[in-house]
Image 1: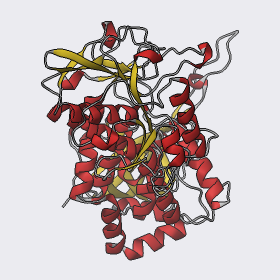
Image 2: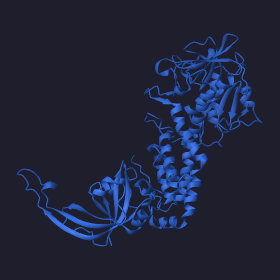
Image 3: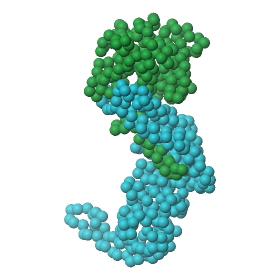
Image 4: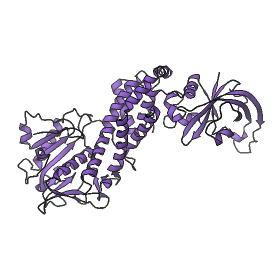
Length: 298
Length: 228
């Protein structure tokens, strides 16, 4: 049976425009405009409601279709002479549905939290594009993932880390990984092995520079601040005259190293996996033979 | 305890900011390209770190002065080797007199026209001009960063530095003594690296002949050693 995700950016639901969630057990209705006479939405279908929030999407509630309401026919405008038919010239239908809210979704309910746990997401640069329509159908696995706020921890860490890198570094990493794992599509390469390789890459390429910047910033501040304005010291590219400020960059790495010293990312992942052994296995099956989640275009 | 999702989101967003220089589009760690990754590459961040560690050591025995550069170079050092004029540098004073100048990445002329070179760190005589030559040099240092800290400096790096001590006439006793403090074993032409030296401490004949000291394991949190 079909499962429908309704994006309330395009489908008006008054209660959601004034509050963050719909009330459990409440009822309501919505309307979908379509050129199709029949929609694949039926009584008893499960629904999830989506609400845009800044650049993210929030899955607010789950529910079920209670009743198929009326269907209004809206004839298209006649095509003016010399013009080609546009959307407004097409015949359209307004489909009305009644729903009942089942559950409010609190845990990991954002697309930014679930993007690497949903196989429907393939655009890691703009995952919201997969939900940018009045409605889309979902498979049962994805519905379960969303309703329970389940996260494929290993894939989430891998995806978030690699897609945080600038494109040249991503490309370089992928080439090194192709060479190392002797593959071009990574379909049969363990994500965990890939993650180890990625940790190593980030450490040698990025964090090693971060350590130097933090150490340099510390020297400037604690040893040389009576000689020079420590915060203003940096580099200039003589060709472009771009300034690279040491303190600005060191601040970021200081925060990163502080976060890591409080609790390492590896530990966090290990705990998440151990607390949800069954989930990782479930997701491994769902994502079997899928390539690594890397966006190489941006 | 920080939630898993919040943890990875925070970490990834810091990594994303850190991997690109703030307020620029320049990436922090440019792709190395075809070169063997294990080979030491020029790395201005490492060079500058070494430069400042040396300045700090010299503060013990000299009065150190920061000389501002001109315009955009007032407090910013050129990312690539450049002419000396108008770039920031340090001056070391003793007994009210300028003892030497300390420059980063400065171009040095020499009697072989084509062989001018930019040592990462140069100790120059107090009277050195804004367009210095090998006559103005006391000692020089080069910094080599490698992403594999277990690697050794390559033969090519060692020989290249040996060539520079030759064309710059730096193989004799330095024109002036530099009184380091903790770094007193680094008085000489140093090839500094975060990794390992090329020469072995049991065979320093070539290092001595070419007046090269190698400084290995020079990195935050590590204990360096001088070979040569």
